[in-house]
Each structure stands twice: as C-alpha cells, then as structure tokens.
Length: 309
Image (cartoon, rainbow, N blue to C red; front, side):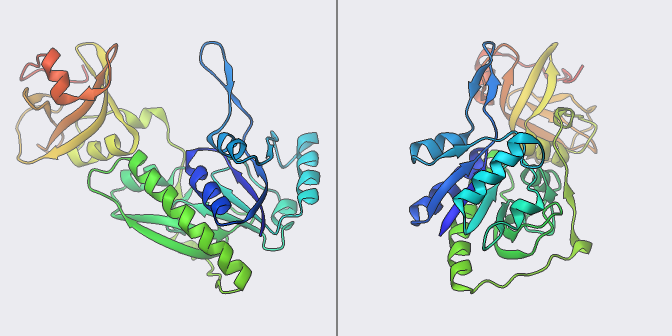
C-alpha cells in the first residue's frame, strides 16, 4: 500500500518502522518543523524525521496544513504522492477536510487511549492521574472532530501500580505499531468493521501544565504518587527544588503534619489523611538524578523536617 505517514515524537517512530518493515511503500513522511534547542538555539529534527531519514524516506515539514502557501504546497505534494492511506500518529497538526478526503482509504490515526475515553492531547498522563487500571490504543478513521472518528481496531493494556508515563508510553507505542500493521492489512482485505464512538462515554485529556507537577502534601499519598508516575513531581527541600521521579505509597498511618519526614532512612513523608509516601528516586537542585538510597549516602535527613517550606 502507498502510505504517507504523519508523526512527530518518539511515540510515532515504532509505527513508522513497523509499516516499513511490513513492506508498505512509505512515499513520504510529514513531521513538525525542526525546533531550536539549547543556548545556541540549534535546530533539532523530530524523532520521526530522524527515523525517516535513516530509511531514506522523503520528509516534508510544512508549518501548517490548513492555511497559507505552506498548506497549498503541502496539499499539492500530497496529491502528487497519491497515497492509498495517510497514517497519523501524534503529528501535532489538525488535518483539513481536503486532506482527510484525499486518500482512497482516508486518514487513519493511532490514538493512545481506549476511545471514546481520553480524547485529546495527553491521554497517557491523564489515565495515570485518574487512577485508571487499563488503557490502550485505538486505530481510528479520522474525521473533522477531535478524535471523534469511527474506531477500527483496539488493543488494551493493564496499567502497573507504579508504572510511569514514560514506561506506559513505550508499551503503547509498541502496541500501536502492531495494530497499525493489522489495520493496513484489514483495509486492503476489506475485513475491518468501523464502530462509531458513543459521545456520551467520552472524556477529554487536556494538555498537561507544569503547575500540575507540584506536590501538595495535604493531599492523600495515592494522589501524589499518581502525579509522580504521570508527570514527575516537585517540591522544595532546604530551600532547593527537589524533583521526585519515583515513589511508593507506604503502609501505615501517621499523625504528623503533611510534608513532614517521618522516616529519615527511607525518605518517607506524611501526606493528607494520615497517609505516607516514600520517595524512591529524586534529584535535588544542582545534583544528579539518583535512587534515594544513593541520595541518602551524601545527604542526611532529619526526622521532623518539612518539605515544601
């Protein structure tokens, strides 16, 4: 099948490589423009651009597909490529109806949730924040609405109790790669059955903001643990910013005020409702990220000290 692939971040790389490995003709890859990074503002290509270049696939980076000269040129390029299908995975741009209607099999999106739940930009983080036990990938026919098109294939995964968003991201990306290859085969053979979404069951996974990572120890430990797993949490310790990359909900209860260190040997902290959170991987401002056991070799904690002050 002649496929145009549209994607940008790491999540989209395994699906692109899986389609190429399955023998499909990837006639072009669309990805976001290179972004400046670092003090010298050096332009950095997206992970998808790097992967496409390694495979010798032509790369297109329009600033917009919806308006302006860039959009007009992009549409002309797409027409010239005459794809049977456009596959989209975290591309980062909204496709206009003219593009949606162009390919024989339309545009197929790989979305990292079990639709219709968690439509939108941040489904991986949101399922962890909400304490969901299961998530997955939906391969869907794209429509003009936001993640509203008919569902073609689904695959589910259990979310580990202490699984981070990065870990879940990688598993979902691999699952998406498997499903999109199955979906292309099903499209060609006419064996897929489109299932409309029930809008009444939908919810929206809004963009994540930096402020959401702040650890408010007046909240129960399970809520803070979910923040750490989903986003990486932060607080302050002895006047310095302390990032928390991993944690565990500790057993037992405490009468200590929220934020108080209750066990200096394990870095366990009192939280709301008398619950306890053990910080297991941290990074103090000016230091390296490390396991708490290593952190404590060079930093003595004081029982009764309070974080966040």
